[in-house]
Length: 85
Image 1: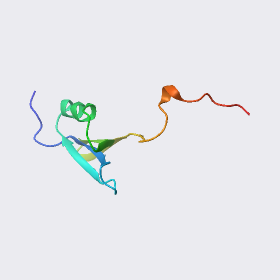
Image 2: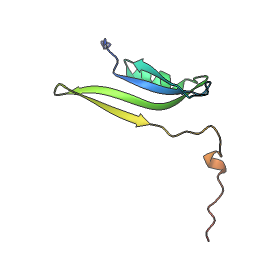
Image 3: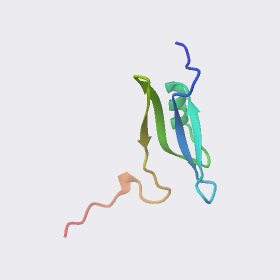
Image 4: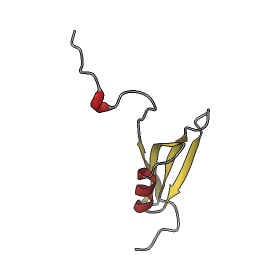
């Protein structure tokens, strides 16, 4: 399989080691690179979204996958049951 000579997308990380939560964009050229970026622990960075680019009939398009995350709170398996009033 030939590797594309251009980025097919980018992973956008938030820098958590800085006060202003600066964005850091990391391009990827293959699905393998995307998987490696998303599954490797990134010290001082938190994955915010993934953007995938494509050309459809000569027109550029992009799909953005966003992620919700928090640095504080309860883990889902430790959540309290809902209290009905």
